[in-house]
Each structure stands twice: as C-alpha cells, then as structure tokens.
Length: 158
Image (tube, rainbow, N blue to C red; front, top):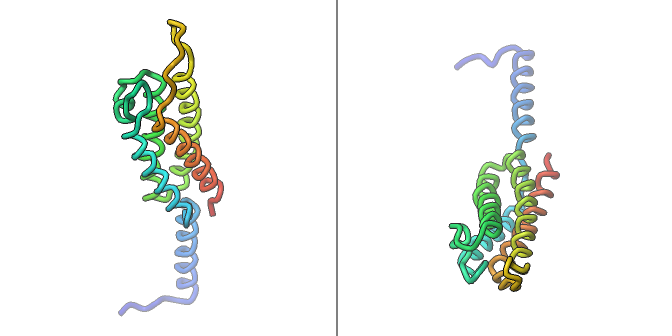
C-alpha cells in the first residue's frame, strides 16, 4: 500500500477534489419534480403530432411540409426544441442546454402563435382560413409551458 502522504499533500488533494466537484455542480441543473413535468409535456408534444394541425393534416404531415410554411416552421421548432433538445437537456442536465431549451422554447412559442394566426387569416382569395387543428393548439400550449419550465430551470442554477 502506498503512503497517504504528508498532511499538507492530503489537504491539497482534498481541496482539489472539492473544487472539481464544485465546478461539475456549477455546470448542471437540478430538475427535481420539474423534470417529470417536462417529460410529460414532451410526451404531449409527441401525441400532438398525430392530431390534426392545419388544413386537415396531422402534425407529422405538417412537419413534413404538407400544410404550409408557417405551420411547418412551428412543427419543426416545437419538435426539435421541445422533444429532441429537451431530451438532451433531461439526460445531460447541463445548464447551457437548459438555456437552449428556454430560448428555443420561446422562439417556438412565437412560431406557434404565428402558425395559429396564419390558419385563421384570410388567404389571397379573401376566404378565411380553416382555423388551426386541435393538435396545433395543444402543441402551442405545451410549448409555452415547456419554455416557462426550462426558463425557471435555467435560472435555478446552483
């Protein structure tokens, strides 16, 4: 067995170890019960993909570009940020990824507002739009709540 060293060496190693633990903790966020709520809302976003979004098309069809540009932008941002980047943030618990989810979530929320508005507005022919589908509205509400939760998480850094 090796000798533990002098008391000064032991003190230095312990100090370095504590400093390393502090640096690791400062780069992460603690999700707690909020993590479960975020997971449920991510699942809601996935379920919204099978519900009607725009022009009678499901969310996954809108994501593929079959329902117009503005709804597709919302589908891409809400799914990309809300589900994929959100999953990375849940798994990694990195502070900067939580900030990406917060900022991206608010961007997607504005996209959602524009997507809903675009479905209610008159087209070039003057005829009013068909209105947003229930899936788009559910996805928009889930995106707003997710953005709020991620913002609170990002601000709660240790």
